[in-house]
Image (tube, rainbow over all chains, first blue to last red; front, side, top):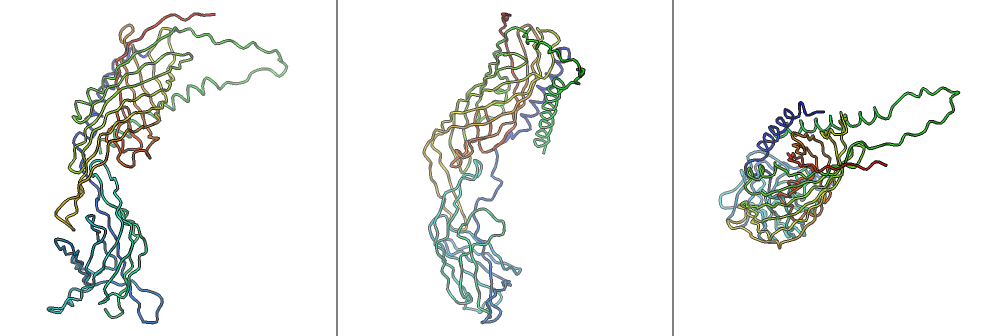
Length: 176
Length: 248
């Protein structure tokens, strides 16, 4: 019944299949997604010593330093209260230095607070093009107290999910 | 973008085929009851008599070697067998084998697999004569693949913490993949007993949980193992074996 136009239909189908195959990924896919899990830090302070309500704290010129080998610096030129850092996949602990306001550095004196992270690493498959990465589960976070009053783990999971959930709340002294 | 547009085109074709199929069925089933109230005679039910003979088709997928030539890291071969049951329903079995070699900067391994699918097709075109075997069809399948994955080596780097890299390996593993398919297509008899035909398919992975450790990049018979749904296109050359049906 359809033989009369069948040859035309088949030819169109063959051409469509060739177009389809050609439009498919004809080159080796490359990794197009983030591969490093991020830990989000949210900064707070108490307006007065007797206050029980923390306030978002904008660090005017924050300076983050990863204390690994080699040392890496991340200097922020605009104020923010939320920062993203990474954890070391090479060990079960790592250290980050935080300077709340790098414009207040006094020659020879650096008010650097050090955050020490202890965590467990989990190997996680991303995709064939991106391979594997580590996700983390936070155990403990310790801090020095130059400008930082205390830290609280608000979410133990550190993954590639960057939907605004922070894992660490850092409380600064009122007059940092 | 062109790839995405082609997907939408084939979705539209699928939808049209299913609409035609449902319209054909609904037209066959609807009717106006004109029986008069006072006519209580029971009409004898006509027994369906299949007028077409038996047909067994053997098919080879011509598109697989073509696609294997385009993708040097994949190999694929496919075959199909279908048998005409009755009332324009065909039982279908498909199978094949293939494999892939993954050689990225951060991940290397290889796979090979066999696969089989079973299901049926329903012709949505009416025959002009009992010997008219040209069909346009819709169908469903269930598929299974037996996958052997080699050991995999991976590399993780993070320049924030070190200029070195982390290397590791995963042991080889045997996996089983399952999927469901919806299919549509045409087959035209260009010479006696010889057909050419095409099929478009939507496949839906049912065993995604088995691939969480490492999803095979390519599964012959399904497609990309890291996708929960895929589209595919086949082009078949078919030979039909026919014999007469014994009528009671």
